[in-house]
Image (cartoon, rainbow, N blue to C red; front, side, top):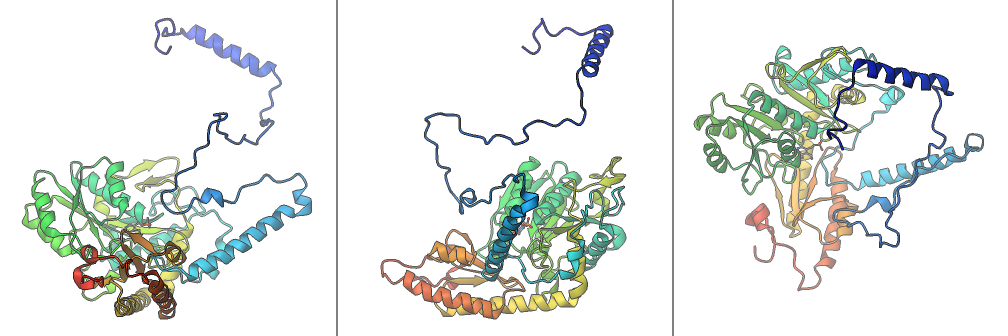
Length: 483
Ligand SMILES: Cc1ncc(COP(=O)(O)O)c(C=O)c1O
């Protein structure tokens, strides 16, 4: 037993020396081959050891269970290199997968990903293991990096969100979630005893951050639009008056695409005695790049007292791999930053290795489109979103579109197969389409025609009625029998 009196005696230096010599003796006398590998590299398949026990079926709660269709990894046969059978098999799997991707891309509407891009020019870089581990502004000893692209992209976003080059710090993250994890961590480092406030419609990554950092987290109510309710925010602030506030402000909520009123949030903080005792992180995963181009939108700018902004790179920007951008004030980052001798760099990021390809994709698309190109795409998305909302309402379907948004919320289709086919994101009785630059009027027409036709069959029976969405999207947007 560990710690028992018989074993817990200390050994003298002489005894330790003798033991070491004995081990060395064994190593030298046995046939010791330092390059030897285990005889059987194939690990046994893990089996249930309850003989005769009924194997319980895994409960499927959400989505489909991929294990039934997964592509098993198979061991190469001894003669595979000669026959080329394995290569041919893998090529056919990949060709079929490519076809599926093409079909799934064609029928995608529910998630905020811009699937329209051409990065053919970057194919030549696939042969390199590009890794930007560490601080983007301090070169590491690992030379196969893309920091020069990364910092160029960061400068572009710093200009968009109005902060001087000398005053910001940031990095290309692996996704919007990492941006939120970082922004909230910086807030926590600035105010160690701060309480995190986030509207209840914030993305789950915000609450994940609170759990990870064991922070006190207060959920604030929302208006029907999905925006943070500043009256409730005020009440909750006053209940924690003695503690600084760390606030997550949504620049586009996940389900309704609602934009929190940043100015009103700041005003609420200042009017209730929180001057200089707050840190605001703006979660712009969805619309962080769209809002600056919308005339009526509250401006996301570091000229206001915000601490950080993050955006996803694979959403509106259109990057083929998940990534994101995180920008914060340089003055805040020193508390977080550590020298890492092994890298010959500093590190204030969340992860270790960082995808060095992502900054190049971002750099490439920002160069091609420029601020003006993105502005045009924003306008197109907003117009197409209005078109979709109007046609839904015209067909007698409950639908809502927030003023600053391209997310159209509507009645959840009755048929799960239809939902899967169009990859709609659903919550309760709501479904949504996020109109991204690749969502054209033609695509919307195909979707709408299919929906309207199939819907008439779903509700043929008088006893089956479309759901009432008044509570979720407001009575004025609900087209149920009552409203
Ligand atoms: C508002 C909001 N924040 C954060 C995220 C997380 O972004 P990512 O999926 O890039 O991690 C999302 C994703 O949809 C989102 O909608």
